[in-house]
Length: 278
Image (cartoon, rainbow, N blue to C red; front, side):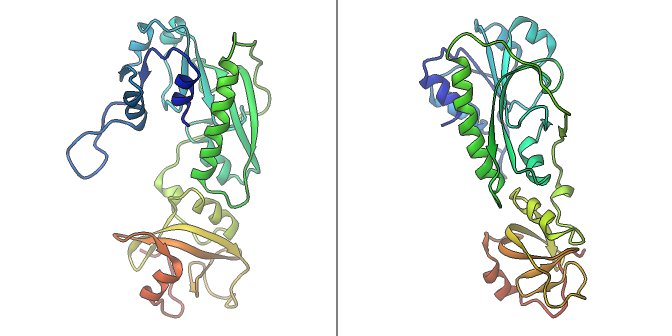
């Protein structure tokens, strides 16, 4: 259940949903609504693309979930807002908190409901809940658990008058948005680091000049050929700067996802052939 569904089911009077404009999301020319807009329309809710419309909606409180933009101070002066954030603040303020927690090797993250301020994720906290990151857990699975935990927490906070929020404590870290270069598998890095990149579900390398997505993999000990340079494919294991990364699922460019064993049968790597070249 999404936070929007949960708010409606709990009986909250949702006056307006603000989300991004319709966009082209495929090769066709037709514009399609965001998933949030589609869900709001299914629930019979009014939708706007301009945040200024929220001020005139007659609401007492705004609820922000993964909006992706800074809410201007002039809006907050007229309509107080709470924000559901997917980290244990002040760790991982910013746009990609779940991704950064995985990349950093964090063993736990969490959800927080905070008062929205002009600055990035600096507001005082109404409630937080820690969520363990399971070994080998991928981004979408973790995000799904965080959405479920965050939805419950948000409903608890909104069940009555807002409690007195408490200031954030600790050293802030910032979760900048990832770019494609960070998702490229640099084989000179350790297998454990590369496995964390793979868990973001968009990791890629190249094979014979074409892009190869690595959808699932596990770190293992170094292959028998320890002298092989990073990127060398030894069976289903890619040599890394420390250890090896066993491929489980991949997606060659222009083809569907498949087991690595299936891909290897077709690719037939030559002895000493390396991934990650031009």
